[in-house]
Image 1 (cartoon, one colour):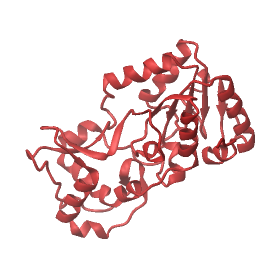
Image 2 (cartoon, rainbow, N blue to C red; image 1 turned 90 degrees about the horizontal axis):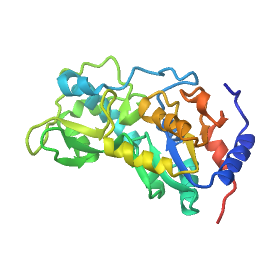
Image 3 (cartoon, one colour; image 1 turned 135 degrees about the vertical axis):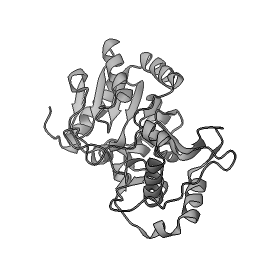
Length: 279
């Protein structure tokens, strides 16, 4: 694996890659949002930094898992809700306006690309600011669900904890048995953030649409992802099969290191801050 590179060197190489391959599909992961205060999942060796996120089957089948998730979210959601786009999100918007990005596919659920002004975005894993009923498909905002849970569980608002990815928090050593999980106001069904939890599948049409854009692109650019999850790695796998160049700007190991045309092992915000700006 490449040693860490200086942001200036990485910015020069990235700029050259963009000039050589001006029609991109961009794939982003948690590493692009850490500068906005949202933690990522893995360390430089692509190992878990904390306990693995909630599993889809556990969330759907175990009320205790839902109690733990929603209780921790009372602490964690406001951090994600109030996060703002950083220099990397904003620079990608600039590239889109210049016609360099055909499609941006994000593994993140924070909505920061859209908040920054990006237009052509596919949320591969859904959006954390929406909540759906798994029975009747009634939809409501995450803020509304948050307020429902907070009203039913005022004592949990006193807790504080370190933020975790996906609007969660590392709230440990707490008895969640008393937490009241609000059900769907329409049918009483299970409410779930409109995201793809681990163990669930990305909708087929989402994948097919993304891959069609990739097939027509001049290159794939990965930013801030270890690609350990197959839903992201598949884009590198397909690009490699189709002979499409792949660049990755991310700190540490990725699952696709052997497939990359260009590996930039450098800090994301510092690298973007050194790229030329076009007014």
